[in-house]
Amino acid sequence: MPVKTAGTPPEEPASGYCGPLGLFPVPYSTGVFNFHWFQFYNAICFQIILGAPIVLLAKDLGANSLILGVLAAFTPLMTTLQLPAARYLARHSYRSFALLGWSLRSIFIATSAIVPLLFFCSKECRLGLLMVSLFLFNVLRGISTAAFMPWITSLVAPPVRGRFISIDHTFINAGSVVTMLLSALFMQGSSEPWRYSLVLWISVAGAAVSLLYLRLTPDTRSAEHTARSSAHVSPGTMLRLVPFRNWILFSLLFALVGGGLGVFPVEYLKVQVHFSPSLIYGLSAFTFLGPMLILQWVGKRVDRSGSLPFIRGSVLAFAIVLGIWFAMSAGVIAPSWWLVLLLNVSGGAAMAAFNMANGHLWMSVVPESGKNHYFAVATVTVSLAAAVVPLIWGWVLDSLGDLDFTTGPFHLRRHSIYFLGITLLSVAALFYSRILIEPGKHGDRGRQ
Image (cartoon, helix red, strand yellow):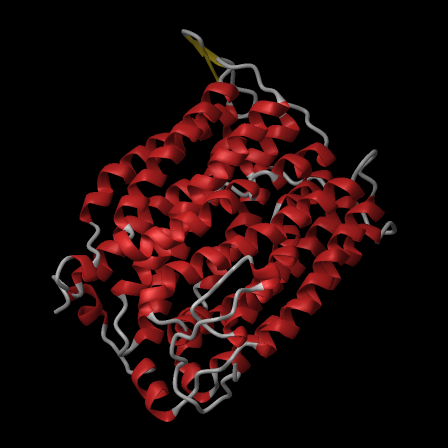
């Protein structure tokens, strides 16, 4: 099939490509499929530089809960740079804009990989250098992500977006499984600095390969398409679009649940349960196995049945998983590696189904005219909430110190209070999901 080049209109759905080994038959071209391979190698990169390996490295360098919260806040906070960046998308193709930012950010993954080896510096100094590298990495990442959602909605037609997202998330989770298993292998034994550095260089390698596949993904720049996508939209106009406004309100609430999930469960397993870094990495791999088992099934049915049933079902399932985390951290259930493994598989599956269905709904509530700004405003708004949450929880956990308050069968400690809080927030999100509107399923009600 021909690969679309810059200056051509968005690609129409094609058929006949079955993916590697015929496992992923898709209704679009091999060129668009390259984006899935980009996501696979990009996952190898970000699961290290933004995941458990960097959290445990920071912890070994003396980071407290608040500093971990700051590290977790960098990514969503810098995503707010999409808003000013959206103004410049009209001057570039989506692909060239993304390539520039993704190439520059790789420099700061490399600087992070050097930090553990700076033995002549104190731990405090190395932690500071690590935070500077991660800050600059996230600045460049935040700017360049402005191109991705407009690009993908231009490449993939609405009837097959659920299928596209499900395969995309499958590749992301496959890359994440590979990354965590490799990290567990390299971190066996003592957690020496050179081992952390080696794991971070794997992240650099993943970033480099991902750029090759990003370059092979078709572009969608055309004068008419650029003008429509970059059209200015006032905040009042956006707020009057009821499906879009309600999606933001709901996503803001759920951001309160997910804002600290990348750091505080890892901290709990290291500090309270005393799992080794290698075991934590190995268990983390199973967080990405669950999604791989269900995403293909969910993706096909979201295209047929809509997003809302899967959003509600996944939020309910995730609330149950968080409730078990609370029971374990409160001493009601004895912590064990097999229970954490089970929770990681089920929680990963629930969160993946939610992200896929919620992303599908997001694409449907954003109109074509002015979509660059709609996507940027939505991302910035939700990301601000996701950035504030880990900062607040980090401060709360540090303030609680060695608290151990017993009431009935529950031992309320620092992390059990955290898990209780996000469990209750996920239950609130389940009830609040009633405000969501899926335009294609409601006769486009509320579309001005």
